[in-house]
Amino acid sequence: MQAMVDAFRQPDVRQKLLFTILMLIVFRFVAHVPIPNVDRDALESAFDDNSLLDFLSIFSGGALQNLSVAALGVYPYITASIIMQILTPLVPRFRALQEEGEQGRRRIQMFTHWLAVPMAVVQGYGQIVFINSQSQVDVVSDFGFQNDLVGTVATLMTLAAGTMFLVWLGELITEHGIGNGISLIIFGGIVAVMPSLIPSISTQSIIGVAVIALFAIGLVYLVVFFQEAQRRVPVQYARSAFRGGRMYRQQGQSHIPLRVNMAGMIPLIFAFSIMIMPPIIAQPFTDAGGFIESIADFIVNQFQGGRGGSGTGIYWLILFLLVIVFTFFYTMVQYQQQNMAKTLQRQGAFIPGIRPGPPTEAYLMRVVTRITWAGAFFLGFVAILPFFIGLVTDVQALTISSTGFLIVVAVVLDTMKQLEAQLLMRNYEGFIR
Image (cartoon, rainbow, N blue to C red):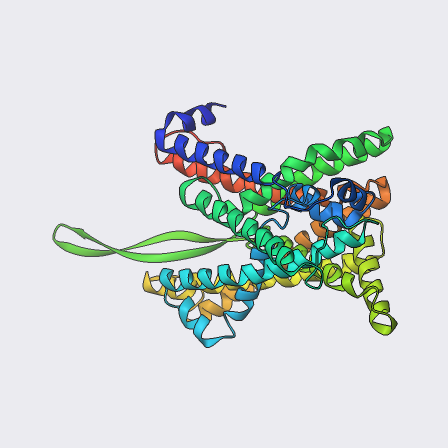
C-alpha cells in the first residue's frame, strides 16, 4: 500500500497509471457497443451451452457475447504477428529490415498492422457464420455476400476497425502508460469476465470447491516461480582505470540472467489464436456433403469438445505441442535479437572457460535450449491443465483458468516491475521485496 501511495505521489507516474486505467475503461466501453442487425434473443440462444463460443467470448472480454465492435479482440493482430515472425527469418527483405534496428522494426510493425486487417475480416466472417449456425434464427440478419453484400462488408469492416482500435489503445498504453498495452487489453478482458465464473463454481460440492481453491493457489505459485526463475551465467570483464597518471586493468564479475520462461505468456496466446481458427474455418463446410463434410464435422466436434474441458484429448494434445513449439520459436527469436555473444565481445567481457566469439555463442545457445525445455513443458502443462481439472471437478467454465491465471499473473508481475523501476529511480521502496 505504501508503494502504491508513493507511486501516486509522483506526478509523471500518477499520470501514466491514470492514463492506463482510462484506456482500459475505454476498452470495456467499446466491448459493449454492438454491431448493427443483431438479434439479441437469437444471440443468447446461440451461446446456450456452447463451450466454443463461451471460450471465444471469455478471451474477448465478453465482447463476443455482446457481438460488439470489439468482438474479435486483438487476436487477429496476434495472428498477424505470428505470421510476420515466421516470415522475418525466411524473407530477405524482412530479415534486412530486422537488422536495421529500431527503424526496421517499425517497418515490420507497420506490415503487421496491414496484415491484421484482412486477418480480422476473415476471422470475423468465420465467427459470424459460426454463430448464425448455432441458432435456429440468424443472429446477424442477411449476413453473407450472396444475401447482402453491402451490409456484410460494412459488418466485417466494423469488426476489423474494432480490432485495430483496440490495437491502437494497446500501443497508446505501451507508449504513454505502464506495462505492455496489448497484454493489458487481454488482461482486462479476462479479469472482466472472471466474476461470471463464480456461479458455476458455487454449484460444486465442498470437495470440488476445495480442489479448485488448491488448484488456484498452486497455479499462482507455479506461475510466479517459473516467471521469476533464472539461470545466471557468470561473466568476467576487464576495465581500465587511471590512477596517478597510469592506466590499470581491473577485473570485474557479473552474470547474464537467462530466464527459464523467456517467452512469457506469448506462446500460449499464439497457440490459442491458432487453435481458434480450425473450427471457425470448418464450420461453413459442415453442410457441404461427402468427404468434406465429414472432415469439417470431425474438426468442429473435436475442437469444440476440447474447449469444454471434457472432450477427447486430440485438441489438448495439439495445443500442448503447439505451446512447446511456439515457446522454442519465440525464445530463439528473442535470443537472436539480443545478440549476447557479440555484445559481450564488444564490451571486453567473457564467460570463464569459454573463448569469446562463436564458442560463446554455442555455449549460450546450449544453455538457453536446456532451460527452455523446462519453460516449454511448464507452459504446456498450464495449457492442458483445464482438461484434467474438468475431469475432476466437471466445471466446464474453468477452461480459461490456467491460461487466464498465467496471463493475469504475468501481466501483473510485468506491470509491478515497471512500477518498481519507476519508484527506484526516485529512491522509493518498491512493491517487490
